[in-house]
Length: 245
Image 1: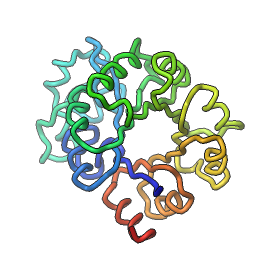
Image 2: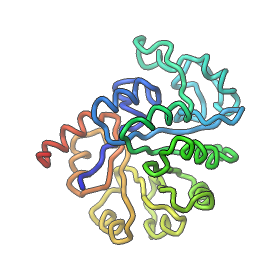
Image 3: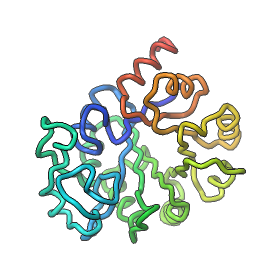
């Protein structure tokens, strides 16, 4: 099987990250999967945003956890990227899953709980995956090892991935002990040896965030299971040219 292409926060070089325009663009480009990030509002609604604060990607300031969902909906999450996207609103995870449940897409939900360990985030996300019948094609990832363990207590069959940007002796074995099915690694950690070790332990290895052509090429040739990229259109074109698909 060829290396899958996930759109990182959607097609986030083409539209504001983690918004419907970015996801729709990725789908139209032919991305096989979508990666997105989840934080929790003050009223415990899972919403799609990478940062713990809204400052960078919206018209507001402050922590996501201090806003209610309705308050966040009043902020502009598009004009920072381009005037074309003025008025773009934040998405709840439920809205995203309702949309993606009708699409043939693999999903990667990153729980942003390594800085703020939101209470019951895993359970709230899991319940929505079950509601929209997408658990079987979803991987839950986190930098927080405790989160991976909590998910396994909820449902041992749910695919999970340990995210890491740090090299560590026995990394594959450590991830396996946590209950993870996959390693999601920063590109600089990618090596033929690591890919082989993951294959030996029946663990998927996916690489982030891969935007440079040379980096994409290495991922494809080493047969990593997937890449996360802001430019899924370019990645798909390169993969097709390499393997004449």
